[in-house]
Length: 344
Image 1 (tube, helix red, strand yellow):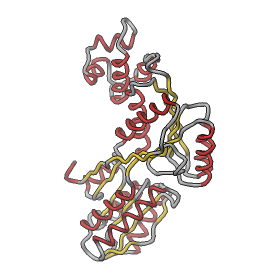
Image 2 (cartoon, rainbow, N blue to C red):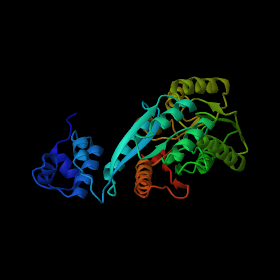
Image 3 (cartoon, rainbow, N blue to C red):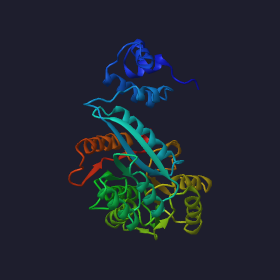
Image 4 (cartoon, rainbow, N blue to C red):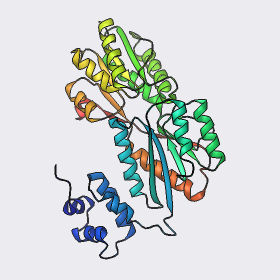
């Protein structure tokens, strides 16, 4: 496909082509706020000059440079690709600082790798946020970084409570209850249901598991919840385990994938021709899950609004970077984005 040019960028940003030309080529001075806006829009539409526009935003006394560190995992997954794009948009749109995003990915959810990556960010960023399991190694890393003046925010799944600067994500207990309530509406016949978590050290997944089971106890006593399955958020493990569930439980009524790896469950239900018979609830709206919703394979998607999350995160990080302190640790809960078949 042809990449967007100046005319497309001007139309998307609501400015003239002449303004875009000035911003790209420096023919005349362009207001800093306009440059920030153009950089964010360029990134959103995939304009090749997005990086150059971001570089043209000059720091000043009212826009100090802030190195924003973020550590994520599963770089190849669609959800984390979308997360990275949302981070770039939020950094470009922030007007209080000139943000420089320092983004790293962990290849696994191993506590030692996550803790090591977080430690490696010391000196490379002014404030840090990460997705990580709640583990003593991670907590120790956050404590060490905080002692050296680097505030750390937890994302999506909380870790190092009482030490980290703040948490931003969904209220995971309520997310689990929402999944349980929906499954109770979708599965009216008696039978078992299953839940996948990435691992028992993911605080958010454990809370979703608790909420899911509590809601089913209240709303669907006819459904029995099988032992929690750990999929390490991988497609292959989820596929194999889902196939085993379908074959081993002919009366299986539903599956909730509380974290990553949903692609495996979708593919397994598709291959087993179990769509419609087994309700499936997943945790991210991606091209794969969107297609599955349209096919009737997915009953509900409970997604994290990444643009809202990243906008709030960068604002908090900018405030922390400018003041030199994160203040009192807080939790910021966003409203989940729900997708049902009739919404597409």
